View 1 (cartoon, one colour):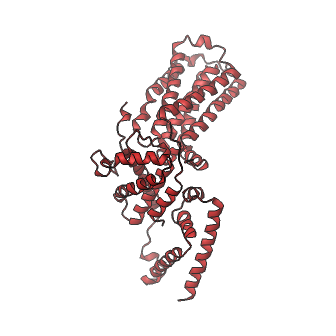
View 2 (cartoon, rainbow over the protein chains, first blue to last red):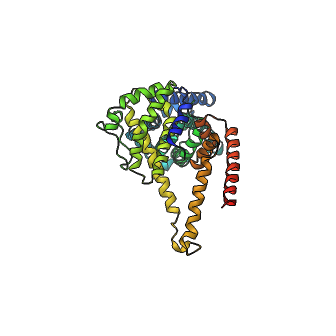
View 3 (cartoon, rainbow over the protein chains, first blue to last red):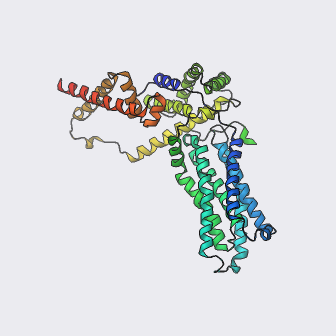
Length: 222
Length: 209
């Protein structure tokens, strides 16, 4: 066993200057700015859904969009806050109210729309493009948040990966409703809630090991 | 927001440092300043800080672990973690809760790992021994352990440090390289040489009864 004085010697020996982390709110802001850039790029490349101007007049659609966006923003803030050891765990409840609103509006939509499902309304081409948007949004956002929060692997891996996964999932769902006119109940459920649940589940299953891997991959103290 | 107040400690296994905790009340402000200077690369400040917090971490760890070696391992784990995340400390906030939160987190992780290990392993009873004679089974193991520990002590300092980091403390090559400041190939060479020397030393010992 290494003696503690030896370990302290070794640590002091390697104590190079480190760049202090910016406040968590600023770092969450940076990540959200990155997310906004990704969404803008997709909007330029793809364009918003054709019926967007009609849809924004429907309160339910607007509520659902606001719910998803607010969930994404607040989950990101929560994730960056609880990644620091001395911040309260209560931050994890921050995204819950907008999450409830978002899930409730999707649920309500399902109940009102299910009669008018048109089986031919969604064809394969749109679904594939929809999946591409899902990947284009969630992959860069997931990688960015993993890199930014890698030091949390040693501290609170589970909470950080779940809130981080929720942030990515909510923003991905927001992007999907913005760019694709998949109004059929089943598709809304599958893409919005399904994608959210899948990304959040992947986050909680692999988030811990991904954070650890990322922490090992990039040496933490510069 | 209520989150700006002092952080509650995750589990109640280890009690948090409170404002009236003698360990942090007096030194908290100093530790905070020392950590701020350490972040700029002030090695003396860093040494004073690490030496200052070690007894406090040890007191937290000794509430959870009975074996002195477990306590020391936990202290080392916490010190290494502080080293890895030292850039995440904000000097405008108190140092005590930051340290206590990290120490608790690492100690709880170790306790969980120990519990999982114990759940998988079964303690051997007398029937599992190959010979009825007690000494036939136990003496050899203890003497082997002692011989190995002595042999490690006799290694050259760099080889000894490498073996301790990689084998006894189970650090990864990358962690060991970060801590020792040596390159990964150098560590691999040192491990190879150390194991070769240990093998030679132990062989000599067993040949000369």
